[in-house]
Image 1 (tube, rainbow, N blue to C red):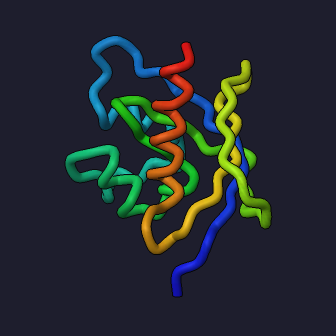
Image 2 (image 1 turned 135 degrees about the vertical axis):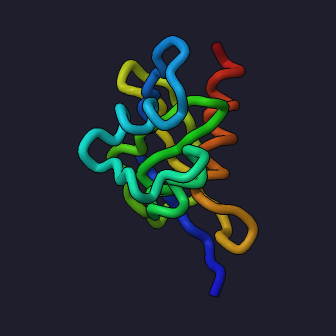
Length: 114
């Protein structure tokens, strides 16, 4: 059954090194957690195949770790860029969207404010 979900956490950008290919970039990000046998073609596919979509956000060619994530009971969306990353507080109906989609929109919103 669909319901409203409320999440709070912080997105921390993990910069890509010059000319780094997707597989190497993801390996460097995940370190020992990377599973060679589940890699196919794309970072996004790897994230979903390995159920990492609430821990790792891949948006516009950049990986973000989703830190201090927890589900809450409040009703507000907030995105703030801090020196530790992007702090967020989001509320959404999970029958129409998902956490990663809300976080992707927030990354765009924060980057417009630069």
